[in-house]
Picture (tube, protein in one colour):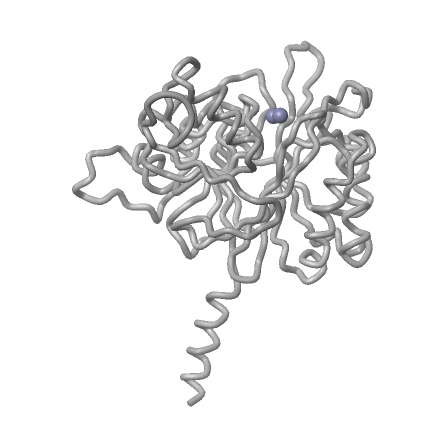
Length: 325
Ligand SMILES: [Zn+2]
Ligand SMILES: [Zn+2]
């Protein structure tokens, strides 16, 4: 009887508890092609990933392979593809696109000729731009299933409703999308659920106080209780610029100061600043430059360290790094 109970409990908790693997494929906010925002995520019980933006998909997968990741993924013997090709084509089962800026979609567009059929989940505004301005036979052939001219149909556009949960096919994951303000432009965040645990991926966003918006606050309301309950495993959030950049020049992005200010808002919904210690944050989208005596990554890291009065756990993974949360 005890054995049966144990078995039951382990099957039960197997479904309830999730560990997410997040592989960074690209984490910059521009300048160098093949380094810009893209991640893949899976529940480690699954072999299938969801792409989170796609600025530099294949370059990042190559780095991840070089760093010894994907050990549990076996290319079937009858497959004619390399391991890199197999992972790109068959292990990634769909993409979430936070917005259609080129640093978030370039990898997907460039490699679309080699991709297999999959879903692109996004807010309608993002899909509209892909249809009209990207996959339109002028910028690139129409790999979508709607829009202009002949439709190659590699990608099924899934226009998602704000806040409504949907299944991310073949991954065991579920998602909900909320809009973000990115300087008069709609960006978005995906809250991912597996069982009873969560991970959130934020597209580019400014601080509410700068953007004169309450969209980030709405997301903190969603995530606060989950953090309090220990069910929010982590988030990916942008910090694009050092604190020296004036608010009017942030163009819908965060700096260290505004990041910590937003964390304070999150704490209003997560039972106080004490619970922020439980939060894991991957810092994304640092913008490189060509200045001789300035390394934005070092500056931003130092500024975040200095401002981090709440002892939040910040991560700065490089392309190809895998972290399990
Ligand atoms: Zn960007
Ligand atoms: Zn952007």
